Length: 89
Image 1: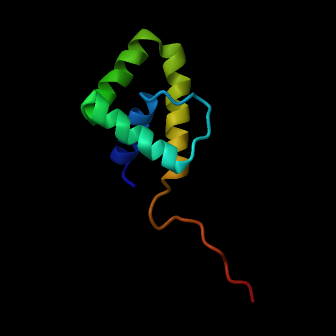
Image 2: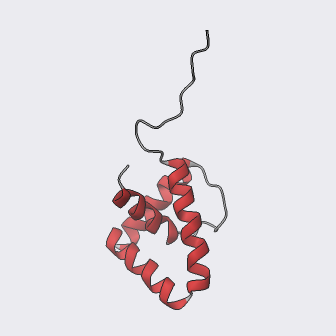
């Protein structure tokens, strides 16, 4: 996954109503991201909302973005880096 895609997903997730610190499933995150992008008018609008939140409430925005990035990174691992079982002889 590209850095741009990670950032776009994290920004969209940031703008959702999911609780900071929650551990949502991939299905929940997928739906939340899709809904955020659709209702806010695209990924640029999500990024603008994130920027506004950093300007208005940086003390809340920082932990929220950390959570969003950690969630996206965990649920959408880079291709080719998925864990696999090792063969043991």
